[in-house]
Length: 189
Image 1: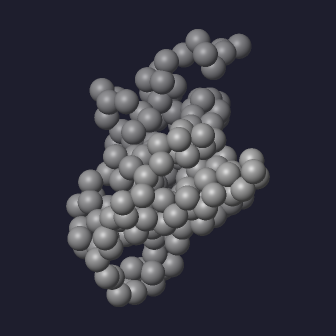
Image 2: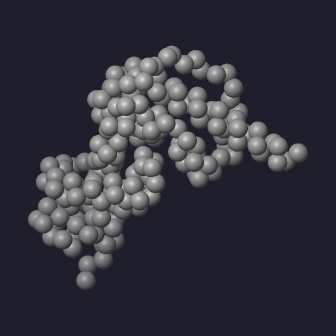
């Protein structure tokens, strides 16, 4: 019996391309945790994230022959998951993107101690409090490294709108950190 950790990604992918269901299962198991981590940042809840991951893997198995084996698999997987999530949210994102955009000034407040004291769950909760379009753009730009032009093309907005939504997301996150910081001081007193 072949063990998952004995095979390289390339070996598993090569056998997946031949349509071997056992190796498709191995690929799914190997990258499930990573895929869920990416999907959870963009999805409403765990159930939605799981649906995105499963749909993304179906697409991956269908398009795996197009994958360049000389490249790393994770960035390709991440891009498919992000695109799959955005495809699911496209109508909601377009509706939010149609709202008028006013330029947002950067607030002067910053508290490094408040940011360093945040845990992973705190950050995810704050991201969940952002409007969908701001959350998606923040994740794409700050976490996944997309450019504003790539975001604009993927989401269906202009690059300048992407910049404004990112600015709004950062402003909202600063306010949420400030609220969390104030609550923390209130509890300590």
